[in-house]
Amino acid sequence: MTRTHALGLVCGATACLPTSLAVRAAVMAAPHGSVQIEDVERQLRCGLQSHESSEHCAFVVELDGADAGAVWTRWTDGTCPSALMVLPDCAATDKASREPCGEFGGHPGGHTYQLVDE
Image (cartoon, rainbow, N blue to C red; front, side, top):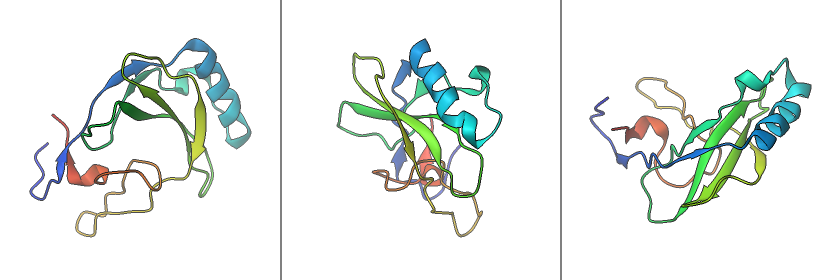
Protein backbone atom coordinates (compact mmCIF):
# COMPACT_ATOMS: atom_id res chain seq x y z
CA MET A 1 0.00 0.00 0.00
CA THR A 2 1.42 3.38 -0.99
CA ARG A 3 0.73 6.26 1.35
CA THR A 4 1.03 9.81 0.10
CA HIS A 5 2.55 11.19 3.32
CA ALA A 6 4.63 8.20 4.41
CA LEU A 7 7.36 8.82 6.96
CA GLY A 8 9.25 5.61 6.25
CA LEU A 9 9.19 1.86 5.90
CA VAL A 10 8.08 -0.79 8.37
CA CYS A 11 11.03 -2.65 9.93
CA GLY A 12 9.61 -6.11 9.21
CA ALA A 13 12.16 -8.14 11.24
CA THR A 14 10.73 -11.55 12.11
CA ALA A 15 10.89 -14.04 14.97
CA CYS A 16 8.88 -16.97 16.26
CA LEU A 17 7.18 -16.84 19.65
CA PRO A 18 8.23 -19.90 21.70
CA THR A 19 5.43 -22.22 22.79
CA SER A 20 6.01 -21.43 26.47
CA LEU A 21 5.41 -17.71 25.82
CA ALA A 22 2.39 -18.42 23.63
CA VAL A 23 0.79 -20.36 26.49
CA ARG A 24 1.71 -17.59 28.95
CA ALA A 25 0.21 -14.94 26.62
CA ALA A 26 -3.07 -16.88 26.42
CA VAL A 27 -3.18 -17.10 30.23
CA MET A 28 -2.41 -13.38 30.56
CA ALA A 29 -5.25 -12.53 28.16
CA ALA A 30 -7.76 -15.05 29.57
CA PRO A 31 -9.05 -12.80 32.40
CA HIS A 32 -9.93 -10.23 29.73
CA GLY A 33 -12.02 -12.57 27.56
CA SER A 34 -12.11 -15.99 25.99
CA VAL A 35 -8.63 -16.24 24.49
CA GLN A 36 -7.40 -19.51 23.05
CA ILE A 37 -3.83 -20.45 22.16
CA GLU A 38 -4.86 -20.17 18.50
CA ASP A 39 -5.56 -16.44 19.07
CA VAL A 40 -1.92 -15.80 19.98
CA GLU A 41 0.39 -14.53 17.22
CA ARG A 42 3.27 -16.97 16.92
CA GLN A 43 4.90 -15.67 13.71
CA LEU A 44 6.09 -12.26 14.85
CA ARG A 45 6.95 -9.28 12.68
CA CYS A 46 8.27 -5.94 13.92
CA GLY A 47 5.80 -3.27 12.82
CA LEU A 48 7.83 -0.32 14.03
CA GLN A 49 9.31 2.19 11.62
CA SER A 50 12.57 0.92 10.13
CA HIS A 51 15.26 1.55 12.75
CA GLU A 52 18.98 1.17 13.42
CA SER A 53 18.48 -0.67 16.71
CA SER A 54 18.75 -4.47 16.81
CA GLU A 55 15.79 -4.53 19.23
CA HIS A 56 12.39 -5.32 17.72
CA CYS A 57 8.84 -5.38 19.05
CA ALA A 58 5.69 -7.21 17.97
CA PHE A 59 2.04 -7.61 18.89
CA VAL A 60 1.14 -10.98 20.48
CA VAL A 61 -2.55 -10.88 21.51
CA GLU A 62 -5.24 -8.27 22.07
CA LEU A 63 -6.83 -7.87 25.50
CA ASP A 64 -10.60 -7.43 25.58
CA GLY A 65 -12.08 -4.37 27.22
CA ALA A 66 -11.88 -0.64 26.91
CA ASP A 67 -8.34 0.62 27.36
CA ALA A 68 -7.08 -2.91 28.18
CA GLY A 69 -4.17 -2.72 25.73
CA ALA A 70 -2.45 -5.78 24.34
CA VAL A 71 0.31 -8.28 25.04
CA TRP A 72 3.57 -7.48 23.21
CA THR A 73 7.05 -8.99 23.08
CA ARG A 74 10.56 -7.80 22.25
CA TRP A 75 13.62 -9.52 20.86
CA THR A 76 17.01 -8.62 19.47
CA ASP A 77 18.47 -9.77 16.17
CA GLY A 78 19.50 -13.42 16.33
CA THR A 79 17.47 -14.24 19.45
CA CYS A 80 13.99 -15.47 20.29
CA PRO A 81 11.60 -13.44 22.43
CA SER A 82 11.98 -14.29 26.12
CA ALA A 83 9.44 -12.04 27.84
CA LEU A 84 5.94 -10.61 27.45
CA MET A 85 4.52 -7.25 28.51
CA VAL A 86 1.10 -5.65 28.58
CA LEU A 87 1.21 -2.24 26.96
CA PRO A 88 -1.52 0.33 26.29
CA ASP A 89 -2.67 0.93 22.73
CA CYS A 90 -1.32 3.98 20.90
CA ALA A 91 -4.06 6.61 21.03
CA ALA A 92 -3.11 8.26 17.72
CA THR A 93 -5.59 8.24 14.85
CA ASP A 94 -5.12 9.55 11.31
CA LYS A 95 -7.23 12.70 11.05
CA ALA A 96 -8.21 12.14 7.39
CA SER A 97 -8.98 8.40 7.33
CA ARG A 98 -9.69 7.91 11.05
CA GLU A 99 -7.40 4.86 10.90
CA PRO A 100 -6.02 4.10 14.38
CA CYS A 101 -2.36 3.37 14.96
CA GLY A 102 -1.79 -0.35 15.51
CA GLU A 103 1.22 0.01 17.80
CA PHE A 104 1.61 0.40 21.56
CA GLY A 105 1.48 3.74 23.32
CA GLY A 106 4.77 5.63 23.29
CA HIS A 107 6.28 3.57 20.44
CA PRO A 108 9.27 5.04 18.61
CA GLY A 109 8.98 6.22 15.00
CA GLY A 110 5.91 6.89 12.91
CA HIS A 111 2.41 5.59 13.45
CA THR A 112 1.31 2.55 11.44
CA TYR A 113 -0.84 4.71 9.15
CA GLN A 114 2.23 6.80 8.31
CA LEU A 115 4.42 3.87 7.22
CA VAL A 116 4.81 1.92 4.02
CA ASP A 117 4.90 -1.86 4.41
CA GLU A 118 6.79 -3.35 1.48
